[in-house]
Image 1 (cartoon, one colour):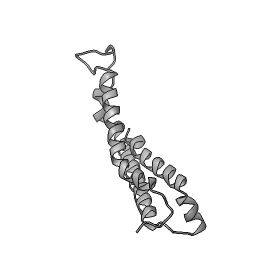
Image 2: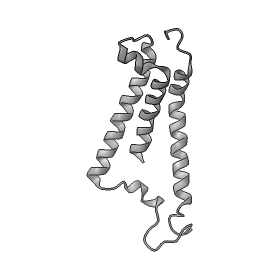
Image 3: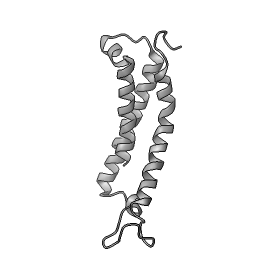
Image 4: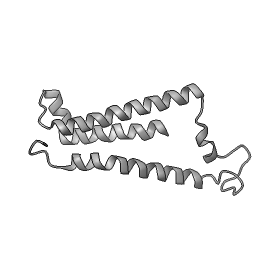
Length: 121
């Protein structure tokens, strides 16, 4: 979940950069919007670093024990009140994670939504 959560920041920022033509500007050597480029680059670097760190941590430990309470145990039924209440608890976890992603990505999305007719700054 950490890899997907952080990877979504990178994917969304790449998509926004492509939509705005920032990637085309960088490929052609034009840096007409340096602040927007730096913000997008910062999000992509941060997301890549965090996703790789969290993924490598789970690989070295073997599992993410924080997630055990969200999944069914062997022999446990669905919506077992005495157990994990699967899939209800898992869906609440995913909704919270999605909300976190949207809120954290909102400033970058709004910045990328501004028209690029004039350089920022």
